[in-house]
Length: 501
Image (cartoon, rainbow, N blue to C red; front, side, top):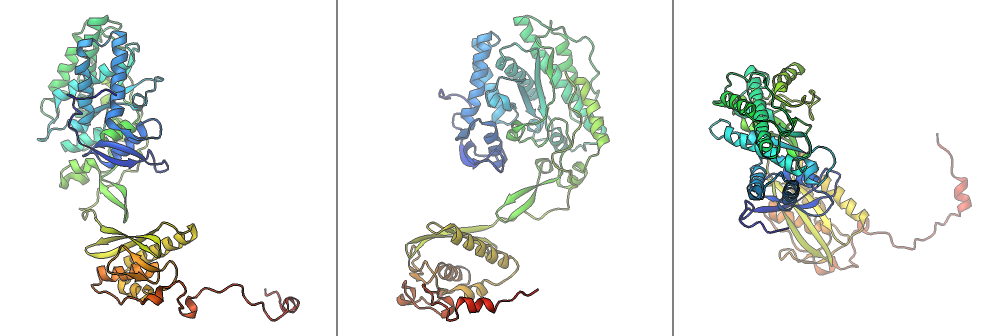
């Protein structure tokens, strides 16, 4: 890939993580902007073809270069505008305002490509909507679709996502006339801006479709300053074109991983799934606020993100459809059931801990701990050389201890029970200057925990206690083979057996 010096990639800090396209997929190395969340890494892993490492920059430059190459070859992209188009597409992606659909990321040529705009990304800090930026994004999205298909198709799919997140940020309930006015105006701007750009291409390359002479009337007013006027101006500009290059430009589509990469939580005009969502953490599954809930004022979350029935969704569909080039998908079941906003929640619990690595009797051992408010909450072991059965037993033991700690069993009780237990591996401890020898993995682990969390060191066992042939209590010793045969002959013992019902 060519160097990207002088572009928006220059100086952008990326972080590395591992993510799989779904819970059952093998994780792959992913590089993406440092501020982007883990859900974006999962989406990027789903968008990238193959199974190897993936970088946002490398993958994005793939669809950018393919679109420019096809567009220039077909004559729909002039050489002097290629650089500006590429930088505009990069800007939409890096601000998470827009991106092509999954087929473009994967280099697939079958089907109709699409470009999606993430509506909440156009919210302004003071509560308005970036009208100029959105109009420009619509034009850039149409140019990408036209270039990536070589200017051949008459029907393109430019759409938007996460209307629910935009409405929450504006403080508008989904089931309200004001919300429907905003949605209709957004759809009108999308249609007008896209057809205006199609008209510019027609003026240069030749028209293939006539301009619509009759438009639906856009909302006369909306709660967002300037939005109604911008919608009227966008439609008027489209009517002034000499003709169009495309018969269809705006179409809403079901979401794919592109929406998740941009941070959009819903597709098209779907309502919000609720005020929180489940997230897996080391301490279990917890509910965290959705992005829509974080945009809304804290005292308005319950009102703005309450569950929405079928009737409000159909009213929203009726408000938006007249400004689309193709019918919007009918309201379908939400990906997750809507849940009412809960009362103010306690902050997300964050647990600290450490991983200790030692060698006991030549065997590598790792002890991982998790603590909260300075108290031990969970433990886990990693054993490098041991067999699967032994590792499974140790995993089950660690889980049992963790459950006990969670239920209030004192750590001191575990220390009393398992310190100085004897079984292999045992011997000299390397890597822990405070505990030079141990009679077992559990002996080292619980004496270490006693020092870290109970504030005291236990006496060290003698060298003879950790020797391979050290004698322990009879109940701690393994049976010695071969065993002596029983004195009673087998035949006599069989005669003594009887069936008990």
